[in-house]
Image (cartoon, rainbow, N blue to C red; front, side, top):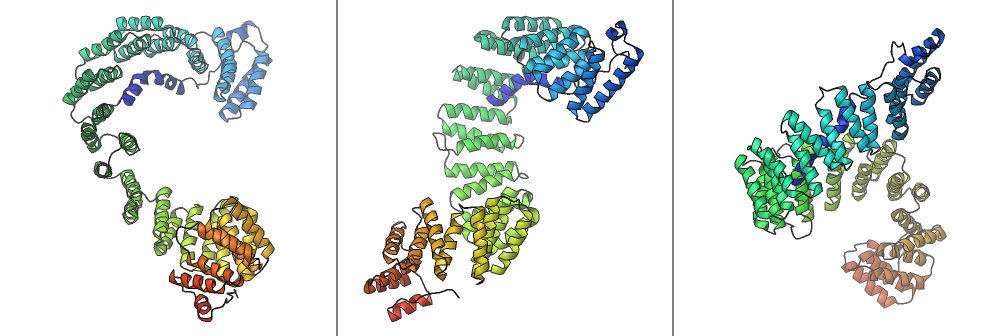
Length: 591
């Protein structure tokens, strides 16, 4: 058991305080007779007609409260109070509604009045004690538990809750006295010892705190968790020798206790003994009874940069141990996907994520990772096939349609893109950025199908939906420039893109090409040279464009050099080869 689990174990009896209300305090308090209404009402000699009206209003109020119509219920209960201001049941019902709405201050005043009118009603007091806790009035809560103990002496929990509330109120001596009375009555129990231990720690009385756990061990010497509590206390007090003795005692009792192996591993990690720590980590990870979530937290800590970061080799070993220990859980293998991605072993990562998906087909994140791996591997055929399957499971996920469109675009299946986009627009939410992205690929498909007017109409919609979709703005400007159309708009679009992305060579190339088409060759040269300076190695298309610009600046020899250089870089354009052969610029115009 780790320190964290033991802390939770220590405080479980405190946390359970709130649970006691869940099934009790919501019970509807029916007024006397439904109505004799209340003794006060009878004493006040309310008329028979008023009694009947009260009964009707009260029952209708309960009905509206049950239906969740709280405002209507409060109005009805308020009219009940106009008839009988001393109706404790009505006060309770209004208070209960305020509690449901999170108004603990108003509910407190109402409940205090209800309790004063009917002090023997346990439900009023149970709700009041909850409200006191919410308002951090712990001393008042403790007094209410004392009253509840007197009212219901058979409930053994109330005295424990009273002691806990006293401790939370800072009345530690009172809490200790309460625990001592409980011990005299019931003998030593775990809640008593642990409650006193916590108080002694807060008081700084370490010997007394240790003594409480030692008493528990004496009563039950084979209970491993008590040795864990002692070990954690010794470790907190920097007594590493005593801490290790108690951890080892747990292993004597239960050698397969996964939690204690984690605690010992943490012990060695604090002492910078990573070799011994790692051995205990492996033993803990091999324990299939130890929950995966606990192991996962430690694993994620061990792979973070820092003094305790484990090697890649150990990381892989631990992952395979986790997979073997939790053979039916896909999550350890999902960690293995991360591991291979981090090592840029993308094929192996994709192999593992396929296994993960076979185990958990209804997890969207796994499908998304598979599609992104396909994209990283530029495996467009797999992208098409996998995205088709993913859409069957998750038709409302927009990224699937976007990634499928990317794959089809790379395969030049433009008509299929249009069908995918149409389907995507039906299923995905009307988020402007998402719709803009889908429209971008629709425009690309239209353009490549030579349906230029339709493409430009769609690009206009893209710009309207998302003015910061810089990829679309850039492509729109470039396509306009290639066709020599609306060059003023192309310049404005490209300028906006450059302003936001001044170091992007592709965007700078577009800007230069717009100026080239406007016959402003000096500006075109400036931006093209800027673009070439932003890339680590020459881009064959940019180099060809640079040669085109130089040709019109009467640097014909240099232009030819750049065209040949573009060819050497892998540009197999027929137009480029013709430029080189004829030593002149030849326009490539879209038809």
